[in-house]
Length: 273
Image (cartoon, rainbow, N blue to C red):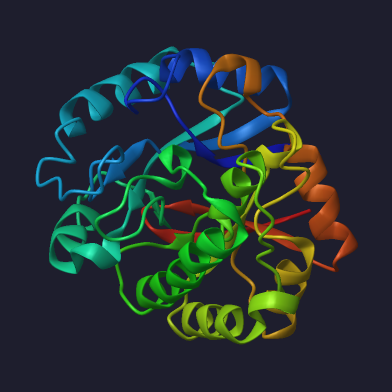
């Protein structure tokens, strides 16, 4: 079975460490035969949460590196160009303009920070109660994002939990704790023909301990009729390329999924697991 990776970064992301070609070759060594680069384009500055009107300034660099990578890569790996568009609900008009870029094959929609606040990665967590309030707001923003049309697949549902655990607080984002809001998000996505991803970064970053979203959310999505699901490593360096993908495929198979989804020119295609 060949693996797919539809969430991977290069030096076209501020936090990327390797070129697209280096990431593609490292992924190929791990069995990946189709991948899509999804470098960051965040509507807000991740350090402050302030609006960033120039967030797609890397567009030309990204397109140039992508074309050079496709020309240099082996023929047995398919490489596509996407984007991880962050906080589209903070400025839907700007997000729509970016999403309409004709060169893009795929767009992940993500929330890394709340309105006016820094990325959850950079947040100082002051105990369970404060962390709980942040997650409540995050869930409300996920619902907002699920109602607009600037992406194809919602990325890493449950993102704050990754860093809240590292910060020592205890907040669970699951169907047990946020079932109704998660159901609202998933129903909105399904009705709009959009999907979710299984983000496999947690398999390499203890104490993450597993996928985002959690298996119960993946199960709920399927029970609600969801079919569009991509698999992503969320790798930012060659050492992490391909890691966790096989585990992600195994989880989907165990939950009864028969296919994963890939995209080309924003159109979904289904690949048998």
